[in-house]
Image (cartoon, rainbow, N blue to C red):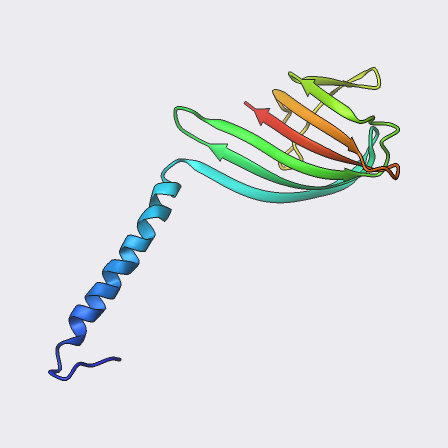
Length: 136
């Protein structure tokens, strides 16, 4: 413990440090009060179109008057011959090789009300899938 020469001068220093600590927390409290919660997740598995997937995603859930639930996800996929490069837009169905499909969240299995899927060819038979999906 720090102690000043007069025996009592350490208290203003402690008080100042305490106030700086409280002020540092204020932005965190403001962010928390916005109602948005972000959760990162991973998923992997086999799917008919695209083959084997390995994904990293982020779920944003915001409550309140402008509530929204959104997933943003990037996946590597093993077979673009069954999920050709391009942009697929669905509300909720996308059509892949003539077959209508709905997006189910890799976070919790919810069916998306709207989704944008962008498939990019990696040049080696594999692809990258970028997903933005909304729920609710």
